[in-house]
Image: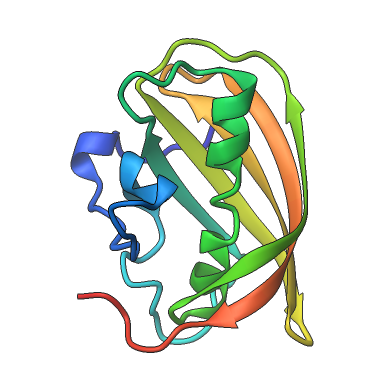
Length: 149
């Protein structure tokens, strides 16, 4: 598990959602990267990390981890150094060992972005360092307009 600050010490990720969105059921905190996904150019290594607080009443299960793993495209903006994300083309998750945890650490690495496509991986960790799942994803890159405030 990468060394990152605990969730309480991490700023929220301003993710645009509506009340009907599944994303509205999760609290996202930036553990590694920039809260606005903007830096002085692209990331040197394509890595970022998010703490995700799983919605109340949702147990840590294979299904919950599959939902959390779909935040891999949030790392596209971190890698590019601008407000961006992506739409999944494919998504593979390998469940290892779900354990009870209030927060899941999403360790994200974008391998590459080219010609409108991005490819990356995600590792999902419990708060106490258990690797619960690993996933990979390809996405169509979406460049967003103005960053959320």
